[in-house]
Amino acid sequence: MPLLFALVSLLSFHVRAAFSAHCSSTTPTRTFEKCATLPTQQASMAWTFHPHNATLDLVFFGTFISPSGWVGWGINPSSAEMTGTRSLIAFPDPNSGQLVLLPFILDPEVKLQKSPPLSRPLDIHLLSSSATLYGGKMATVHSGAAIQIYATLKLVPNKTKLHFVWNRGLYVQGYSPTIHPTTSNDLSSIATIDVFSGFSAAHRDDTRTLKIVHGFLNAVSWGVLLPIGAATARYLRHVQALGPAWFYVHAGIQLCAFIIGTIGFATGIRLGELSPGVVYGLHRKLGFAAFSLGALQTLALLFRPKTTNKFRKYWKSYHHFVGYACVVLGVVNVFQGFEVMGESRSYAKLGYCLCLSTLIGVCIALEVNSWVVFCRKSKEEKLRREGLIGGGSCKGSGSHG
Image 1 (cartoon, rainbow, N blue to C red):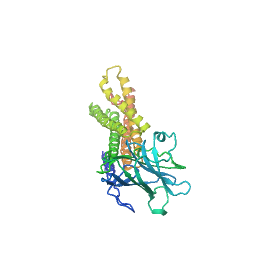
Image 2: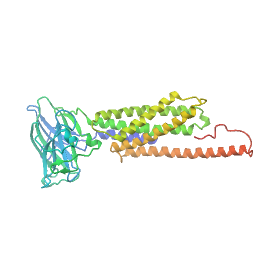
Image 3: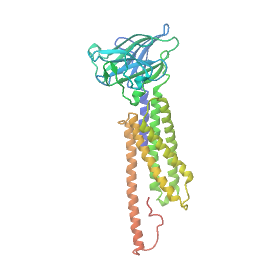
Image 4: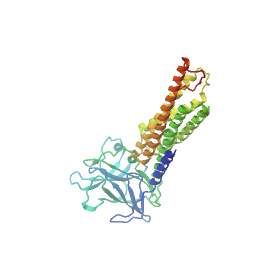
């Protein structure tokens, strides 16, 4: 349990870290009134809104991920999604190598990759735009290079809530950016912000927090409690001093694991609704499979035959098979979840691995002990049948399985 507490502490740290980022409202040439740290790609944005003429001055801070890549920022006039975004995309000119900034409209054909994006004038009131690399005119595009995209727009009066979209890619073909990576961060680079109040109407930190809650609940339920419950059934039911208490311990742990896992499963469904276009096929399928098997195990308690029933042995076989399958799927999907969240090398994953390793170590020790006891009982029973040792029986104590 100390390791489980450590896992809780590590995940709590991640929740705090999600809200600890800061932004800058100052550039080498200008100072803006408000700023916001965007939830993905370590990007941020600063702006000044002029209510008297509904003009917005802003700068987007982004980074390149390739010397031949691109960085883009834009506004979607109608909805919080990539399709329909009016964007400004910066990349090195294929001929001169100098930084260029071109306007693009991301229509459905671009998202479906039916045709490469072609630069064309934007149908929004873009008064001016420019892009500079951090470091001035002598700076060059390289992996990790910081860029600032400036824009001045004329907004529709009394419409200050805007959908901002940003992203970055590895390559440019000619003057057409290629598709960006499709990780969780890249597919979630959208935020709706009221530029007048500075309030993020679709706060992506909420999604990040929901992801952490989803991961924590599922790691604890499917990844820790469920294996512990299976271990109690395997190793405690042969302890005669406990009597039927082992069953209530086993059932209680598994029921708690399923309830917590159900909440975690529901948060996963909600995350899917909040992240249109973001699909993790394997993680989703494993999640549905584990939840379905967990539900079957819970329902199986209602149809548990008595020990004298002739169908008891079939029920036990079904219960063991489904139970162990659920444990394996749950643990595998927890590791898959760390990959999905981009936490494959995080302290949270390390903490979970320590919890799981400790549990496996305890199970190995108990397994060895149970086989030692089983072999000793079998040997004594054999000697007893051959009449080499005295009478007395040890009913039920030599069973293993």
